[in-house]
Picture 1 (tube, rainbow, N blue to C red):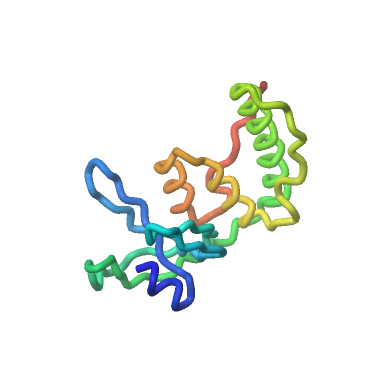
Picture 2: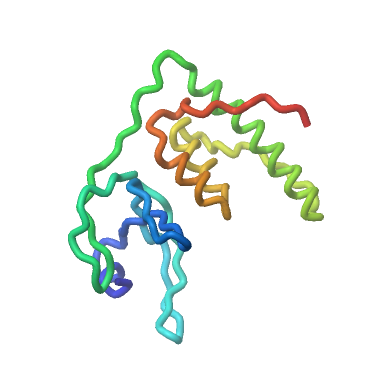
Length: 158
């Protein structure tokens, strides 16, 4: 698979698969290889970024790797809500989460400013989901949402 990717467009589909049950999610994300390095033992070191979301509609091939037909998913418009206001609220909460995580892990407090980096709210929501490392079910639930405002942050006091 890696040979094909490196020689073609460096894009591939990622779908969550439960290691215990073997079941796979029906919605996934395109991964694009941003940087790659072949290691001496024929493995690869990859840096990838998530791109478009898709729904698997049909399995075309299973060997030597899975190939599927997909339909592309678009985010629905979020109605009358002010997405910038919501994204700013989420950014404040994310900064607090980072601060608390650093404290719990004995790391020095760092200033976490401008997490949004001028991203539109929907792109910022993808970044927030990517920070849930080690929580694949939560990431999958966020990936499956079609509306940026579908899950609103709960106001919490720290």
